Amino acid sequence: MAGESRRRVTRDETLLVLALSLGASAVSALISFVGALTRPGGLAGQAARMNSSHAPGRPWLDLAWQVFGITTALVPVLLVAHLLRREGAGLRAIGFDRTRPAADLARGTALAAVMGGCGLLLYLAARASGANLTVVPESLPEVWWKFPVLIASAVQNAVLEEVIVVGYLLRRLGQLGWTPAAALAGSAVLRGSYHLYQGVGGFVGNMAMGVIFVLLYRRWGRVGPLVAAHALIDIVAFVGYALLAGRVDWLPTA
Image 1: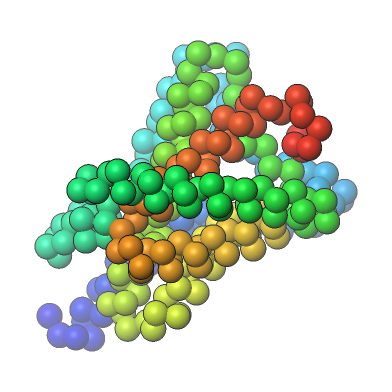
Image 2: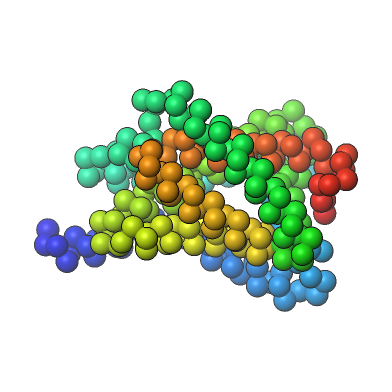
């Protein structure tokens, strides 16, 4: 395949993967943000809800919808794994495998402790300034599957975002001739964009997180630690909110 033709195929493949996953989420988040911004009452008086019930009062049907949503959200990751395997690489090429689980978890835990604390402080500051909606990480009913679903949702978020926005996207942008600085900026802006539904704070905070994650990925050569860190951050956010909402004064609730 000629160079220009290969480049076009790579470009189209990348755009299609993003259109089926986090690129579409970025557009949806932008539309949501514009709607919130133009609604009377200010951003802080509105709520950005995550992990909500899909069938209130019908727990088994609700569970079926939760499992369906989590599993189908991972289909783009399977597509990326297929595409990388076709080029003879596979997910091992981006460091998402089981060759170094202890090191990945140790690095991820340390990273989560730093990023999670900074992220919480930034969110509280952004909301107090009126630049962010009130984020409601979960509003599931009090049923037996609540916490397993929240944990599974956190892991799904982590795998989807880090595999696609860091490992896959940086690999493809490099193949398309993007400079390292441009690829870093593209990855970080995309990460911030699909968090715009939370407000300006969600955009800025996640863009900063994207810069740090890309730099660490380039240093470590693995998305494994990033997946671990992201999963731990979201688990603490989802489960922590479920346990603390309405019981502590410092945690905003809708």
